[in-house]
Length: 274
Image (cartoon, rainbow, N blue to C red; front, top):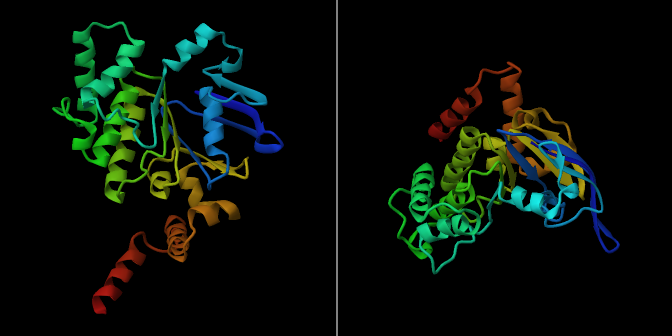
């Protein structure tokens, strides 16, 4: 579990984050969403220790990161896995070498055990036998899965994912979402996902923090979004008339005012008649 308390961060005269608090829960996908410039990236960098907040506290399992000494911070960083937006693979290295890089940096395992661990995480992301391929030889979705494999190779307690579906088609995005969710549950990881992808929000959003102009505007689950009356959140999530209509129909279904699936069936019937 990661707890952030009253985080404030400014650059010069410009305040980026103002009094943000929240709990990122273990075993759940914790999503940070918001429009560009809302403070998502700065907040994430504060949480992982790349930026020091001007005020506030960040606690990993009850221990303040800001009070840690150098040795404790190094140990904490080894417990953090990172999935970068562009996968950040080394083009000149094979899939296996990309994953081994992390083990070589932070592990004293034997080379035999390291390669065994590489095989284990590749199997976890369903890329068995891809060890000797180069990044240029695999698809965008496969690169993301290699990135996930590298992120979990040290058995992290915390997993940060920056726009994991960036550049992927909708179907591949769902595969990545389900994989992140499965890993979070199987390994009981505290997962933090920064995303603009509303499919991800509705697919894996166990807990969602919506930022607006550097402040926490709303917090809840993907189920709570359906009934939220927060205008800014609704304008962000349900931006189009189609999505606004879909939300209204879903609310009626959940409230039992129409039979679930009826609206979809009627729409399909009308399309066939045309």
